[in-house]
Image (cartoon, rainbow, N blue to C red; front, top):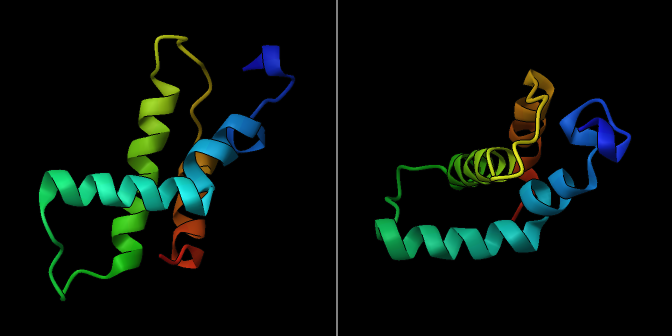
Length: 87
């Protein structure tokens, strides 16, 4: 993480591009539907988006490059942005 000159994942451009960008979340949502089938009416869509953002964060963070420094702030940032994403 220090190689990119940032101390916290939410400051990293890769985090914003991979975990918060609405177009990326939208594509991941369609992949989620392909694998898991349709979501029920009782399941709030923003919770599904948040789940998708968390999965993208984990996949990006634990990629073979072994990035270090996963912080609570990165998880909170995913959660705080998911209601704003609309498909």
